[in-house]
Figure: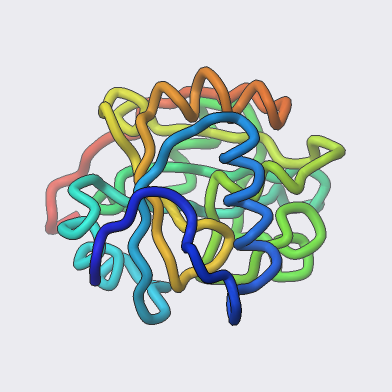
Length: 184
């Protein structure tokens, strides 16, 4: 894996959803670094990519309430375990579960394994609430997929908070999820 600045010079063979991400980021003047790789749909694969990017790729979970009327994109450090009770208390909602692939495609234009904050650019009706674990935005940089899991991007966190999120009309809810000992 190599590290590149910005979009690929040759976009042949790349999915349209990925190209739209590069177009959107470029239109906002957001600088980013990119690496291309095989399918990375597990945190173990993302850990290898982290070392190339020099940043943490977030764990991104697409969640919904029991009635499937409220949807959430949770960004959290990849090494933290997810326990639904920790988030529901903080955002004041009922029990959450993983949302189905059909909602992922409808709201974020993303397939399973490629869920990312970049998908919010496709959420024109603001159906998805962004929820961010506090440590994610405390880092100088963050990494994510460009709506496909065969490339990964590295950004300055400030660019995501100050340029990207306002442009996609999403305000995050910041939560503080606990760390658990490994044996819990």
